[in-house]
Image 1 (tube, helix red, strand yellow):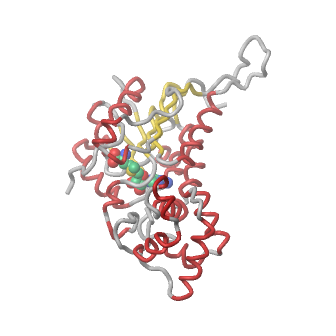
Image 2: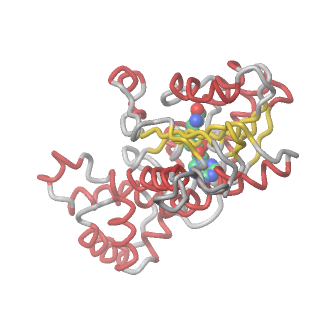
Image 3: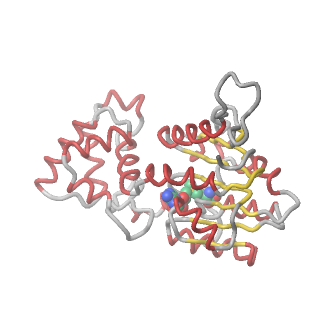
Length: 317
Ligand SMILES: C[S@@+](CC[C@H](N)C(=O)[O-])C[C@H]1O[C@@H](n2cnc3c(N)ncnc32)[C@H](O)[C@@H]1O
């Protein structure tokens, strides 16, 4: 099954934003979140001279996207690493700078659709949630071993869950009887603990807890915190970065990383920009761009997306 099951999010806009940096030259792009290779495939088709470096922490994504992108031959290099290793991956392939970096954060439709990986709360499945299949702590490990304080902090910070403390207490009580193994039991617990009245505004009672566990299991925010400066560091002058986030903590990190580099470091009041103190990037988006109604209808996964993009206009300070 090499056919894509879903449309890449905001594909036309992503192509449009990259076009000025890639057109008519042998450019290099890093797709740091290869997934099923949807964005990569379209970029390679749109730019016949483009070389693409595709990264993904999920070996299954590398394998599947590899098959899908095989028709582009030696223009494609795939590396199974987390995106905070972008600088090493670029250097190992013999490049010093690249013309584009794409980050389409979060889980892929492939990961969500594979029930046994435990990302979806709609199916009873093992509480796994590891994107780097088979390595590191699972969601069940978090539920069965974390202290009340740590669990409540994870749920409240990463899930923005108002009932984090109550949920943590219920988890600790329940795991005394028997450790958690499957999502069905957790979902049942969440239905019992999250007040029915809050569902009208907050959506499914398991939504925020599942998001929080996934972020914790995969160290997602730490990886992104390290990846943003690394990605901006490998971008050539004239090169462009496009980031699609799906939750507010990620989007906030992206916004701050770009805004910081878009500022001049010349002390205020000086009539000219001091050499080496000018802005490093120019923002290409006003605030965060959202999906329109048609996009969301075609692809419900696009509903929460926040897209931000920037172009490097000065060398790293
Ligand atoms: C939303 S999907 C990308 C979909 C892709 N743009 C497409 O068109 O098919 C996100 C992908 O990023 C990967 N991923 C998430 N966190 C990562 C990280 N820290 N490093 C590398 N890959 C990561 C996931 O394994 C997943 O395959």
